Length: 156
Image 1 (tube, rainbow, N blue to C red):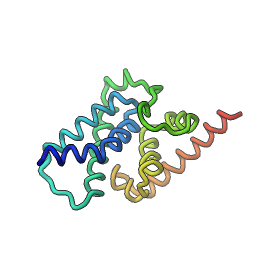
Image 2: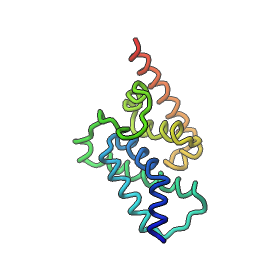
Image 3: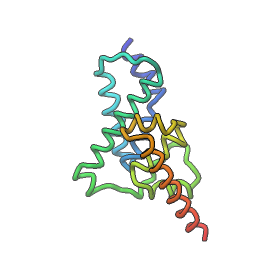
């Protein structure tokens, strides 16, 4: 029974966990490590969730934290491949938009991804990543402006 719940949860939220992790780590290999860690921790967890949204928010929060830890490691700072296409094997945003996304800082990418691809409100994102809502809105605004500049330069 527990295996069924794990499998169901992975099928339902696995892509989200992987994409969030990729948006923070900047590469698919580390994102896959985060994915494994998140679902291993979930498997070990003896916790009841009040709703599917509560479960999803918990998975995303753990993924963000684990991805941040990977980015902080000395090994990662030396070997990060920021040019790697983090959306390989997944429905890909327009190439120009993807290029602009890859130029954002990890926190900016995570906020943009959660808001525009996952549909989370700024308030929900603030709770998930541990910032104040006003900070999330500010980061999102700066990220959008930076992306507009990048896209404008690409088309000149």
